[in-house]
Amino acid sequence: MKLLEGKTTIITGASRGIGRGIAKVFAEQGANLAFTYSSSVDAAKALEEELKALGVKAIGYQSNAASFEQAQELADAVVSEFGSIDVLINNAGITKDNLLMRMGEDDFDKVIEVNLKSVFNMTKAVQRAMLKQRKGSIINMSSVVGVKGNAGQANYAASKAGIIGFSKSVALELGSRNIRSNVIAPGFIETEMTAKLGEETIKNWRQAIPLKRGGTPEDIANACVFLASDMSAYVTGQTLNVDGGMLT
Image 1 (cartoon, helix red, strand yellow):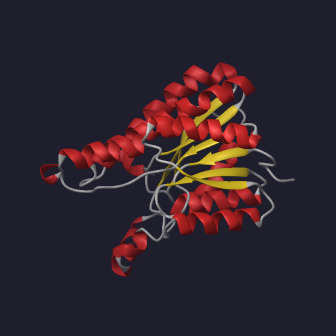
Image 2: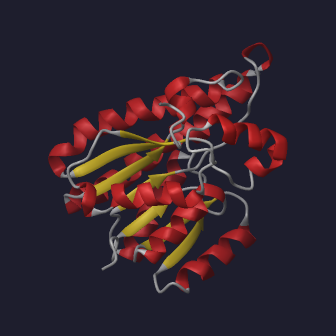
């Protein structure tokens, strides 16, 4: 029995890294997928084919989650194409790291817009469909940095902490309609983005983690499967740290 059989899932920012990992695991669990990407057309096409090969319906949409209008258009397109929106995973995110004294206003605004405002845009966009169905699961991707802060990432930490407060509020507002809202806070996840850090840096990171390894996109995906499926039917308003014990 597949845990997500026939559930229509929207994943933002899925052409690479964690988003791509989630899409693949969800397809294996029977979910139909609408995913967004910003510019990587080839990567999106390749992912679409990969997901379809797993026997599910999958469509990639070029859409900017930071745009309120585009989020609305995406939700409408998904409802008319798939018939429902059962799960939303807000995963799109960027970093523009710098110490506060060197951080420009644009570096702050852009990170808040892409990481935090996109969560508002997309949640608002899918709300109508979920209210009509009287069910839904919203999963928002925060970070350990949003829970404990990090030097050189004031903008990123603010955006990721904001996601936690937003998600708890949505859980309180929509709980009576059987719509759940939860957060996943990944720790150090090894993707093509972290590979640029260099082997020595990565080794030091691993040593500082109680489980002595970086996480994989699959580790995050498995936690998402739990929160998207009926196994977590009584879980809402929670932040699940998937970090190998970093915050212990």
